[in-house]
Length: 374
Ligand code: SF4
Image 1 (cartoon, rainbow, N blue to C red):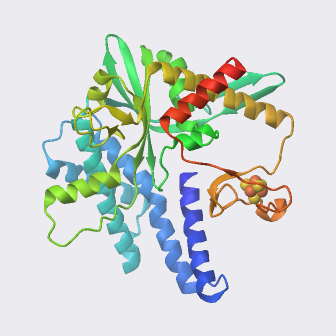
Image 2 (cartoon, rainbow, N blue to C red):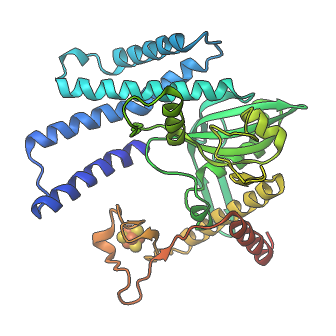
Image 3 (cartoon, protein in one colour):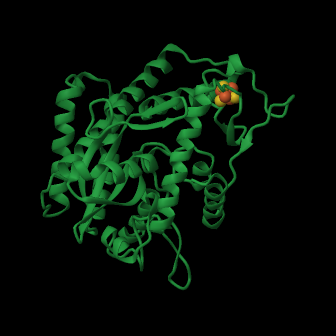
């Protein structure tokens, strides 16, 4: 699905560019061929990165950057043998794009290796499936006359064993700019990671043989990282700039011991975790208490029940939401030509996703739980 959107967005951005220049969607044969090359390279990106990360995290103790580079090369070579046997016959542009992709994979793998080296959490599962013959059952909701089943996969699950309990965090590699956003969750959007986390809490004990404690969700940027810095910049400043680009987004359990286990310097100078520290050293953003996560779990369950009921009732209202006209559910909608939704015309109104502070977010969760007695 991620790949679909990536390709789809590439096509859309190209189309928009063509429209801006000539007033037409004009993509000639040569350009289309170049685009297809980009698409083929992009197609391999997630698989290649996943494979490289898997090899890196296989339990080996790495002796240094060189060995990591060698492992990454090995993963890329194996990927090429399996998926790009005719690589040498491809034209220069394809090979250039692929080499660029290899550099990106190297940067991300190195960053993840450094993260794991600074953490007591270790990967305990890759591509963990929910339903469809996966490791865990599908997420399902039964409510008055309606049932809803959600299937999917989690890119990576990291665990930390403490006092017999297994703390789990769910990690998703994001090839686009998407970040975890409380405003989205408030509107019932992008809740998959939370769904997986809370299902792991309920069902993961059978798989891992321990009581599970939900410890958070993280989006890991896995995209071409471009850092614009002056020539001759020293390595420390370059790394800081890269770190900013590769900073995870998400929400994690805000218990000091757990945060330190996730990243040893989390409470002083977090490099990987999405924590914002206040002047007094307190954590202003990026964490939730165990009680808040419990409430969020109930809230997410309630959202699923509502979705199931709306499907049962056949509700197909044109009722989109978005951050702006250019960034809304309608922007890439395949049904736009059929539904004729025109924001601001007649009764058509797009619901705006506004930024929300953590305090506002948790206050709304409390209100919903109170009103609906869930
Ligand atoms: S174009 Fe219509 S169907 Fe598509 S998201 Fe917008 S309102 Fe919904």
